[in-house]
Image (cartoon, rainbow, N blue to C red; front, side, top):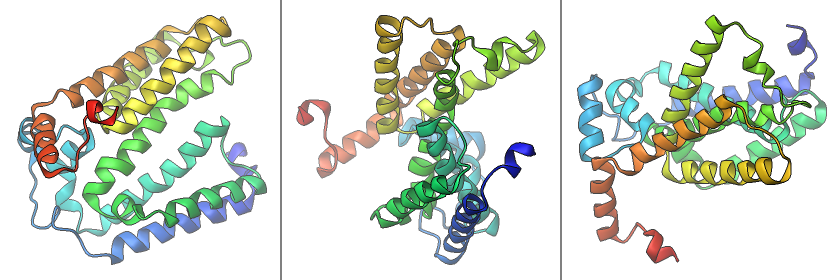
Length: 258
């Protein structure tokens, strides 16, 4: 509670203001065709989606459980919560701390203005399918990256976030971290590749330059993330979708890129 009291009022104004703005937008804008008339699909629908069209984790969750809630006010609040969580988590990823000062509120405002000026804003923050594929995915990728980021804030790199906790708490925390990292890695192709590349660069820096021994949980989180990406990349549905996109000319292979 003391930590929250030390946050400048201007930061709260930006956070609450942007959250309310997102709630209003999500509540007012019409539901897109992807979510219209969608029922409660459950696990069976998610498996069918994975095998036939899309391997992205949050799209699977949406197909199974959330798409049918998109027309409701509940989804407006839920999607807005994910949106503001992404903004705050991205700030922590950059600076290694929560926004507290007036200058931090200025940085948050600039970041939000950059998001609002993007032509993709509506399809990412309001459209349900777009939110699942991008907003929720990038929020998850940033969140599972925070333990790695905060590890580098420790002067002696002693892994105190987990190492000093009793075993009964340490194992559940590690399991949650592994599962979350796997799901995040499976959430979006481009975001996952970018995160893996950054992890690789930081690992090279740690081993050969900083001479820092990376803890077990740190490495395990990265491996789980990579496994999640592979589950997405080699999913049968993703291969089908890629083939359709290549035929339509809206997909570029790695070979074509180079």
